[in-house]
Amino acid sequence: MLGSMARTIDEILAEARDRLARVQPDKAHAEMSDGAVLVDIRPAAQRAEEGEIPDALIVERNVLEWRFDPASDARLPQATDHDLRVIVFCSEGYTSSLAAASLHDLGLTRATDIVGGFKAWRAAGLPTSGGAAR
Image (cartoon, rainbow, N blue to C red; front, side):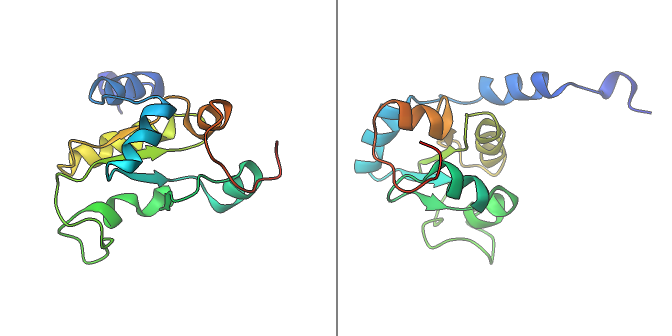
């Protein structure tokens, strides 16, 4: 029995976001020029439907921690240390908050996510490509 240990997803999301300095799409776009790694964690079907952000690194959510843990044999070449600035996004900015908080748990304390996710990026008129839904 979970009893008092049980929490709602809204509580978990709020706790995750309390740990993050979330960024608006325009700030994320600017930070890409300064070397931040923009990471798209949406599944392939969602990317195909909604479109993509040019130069964003695609790392689906189910492997994110393994790809960014500097100690992991499955890490990406970019994941050389814990000081890496990682800006995660999903479709609307919910799953990405949980993912960024998970990266914090690995010691990547500069990780964050985009408020409003891909949809907010597109609504801000920032560069996108592809997608069936326009």
